[in-house]
Amino acid sequence: MANKAIVAEKVGMTQLWDDDNRVVPVTMLRVSPCRIVQIKTTERDGYTALQVTYGTKDPSKLNQPQAGHFGAAGVDPGVRLVELRLDDVSDYEVGQAIDASILEAGERIDVTAVSKGKGFAGTMKRHNFSGQRASHGAHRVHRKPGAIGACATPARVFKGTRMSGRMGNQKVTTQNLTVVRADAEQDLLLVKGSVPGPKGAVVVVRDAVKG
Image (cartoon, rainbow, N blue to C red):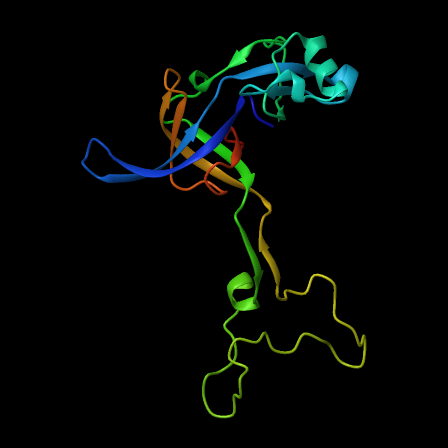
């Protein structure tokens, strides 16, 4: 697991120039300061994690369980609750704020988000199939997957066979990205390369497991 993590919102992509005057594509993440609502420990919960919230929400729009949860912690209600799994939570306390200052330029991170949903897609787009031949004897089968069954035994299609279906809209983790800039004053985090999800997506940033 990770030693530090934070929740961010994907703003979009842009580019910077490094010291060698080379273009560096970066993804801009808005890191609103996260407030710790609950600390989960191995003795009580079986694992260690931080439950955090960010942003602000009108208390009148909370249901009773949510209002009681925030009230017991003494934390102002936020947009949503997110759990951050960490190895050690001994240095944190309820109500503490976590911002972009926990990360530094050059640090390796893993970013987790829900990828863009692309709807129903065929096997060529979804699984990178080559399709059928586009020459003599091929009649309107150019993008079809081909045979999917076996013989008379077992006379069925195996589970997990790669076929057409919904593409995207799944939890994706991109590993070993590099932090280009961490600006706690402007609540911004610039990450080299692309990050899963559309603009406005909620992403979880943690230090790289394989860094």
